[in-house]
Length: 138
Image 1 (tube, rainbow, N blue to C red):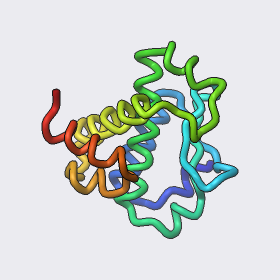
Image 2: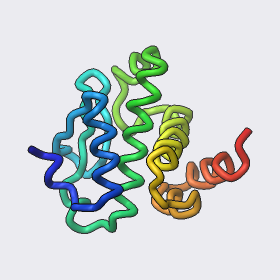
Image 3: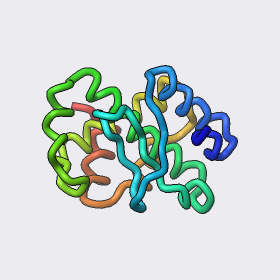
């Protein structure tokens, strides 16, 4: 089973279980990027990250992809929007929403990651926007 390749960590395991309970599968990404394909209900992960990135990075990446899972479950029309886009063309509003939903999942699962540590792994310019939304929700 591919998800057994994830580091043995209570919090990573909680996120993997969250995914599996929703019928989400895991597969190796052919490119060095994590992404979710709603048409396949699959989270694609970069294997090297599992070996070389800290647990906090993996938690953030998993939570973000699970944010897409939940967002697309709640708004299936958004999944149709991205069906024909390349990964680099995903609208910022969908990425921001997935990061915010991912952080809510982290809190729901009682994973001890602060907003500042969560956004540490997010690239600018989204990093500042997401942090502001996490610490001062609209």
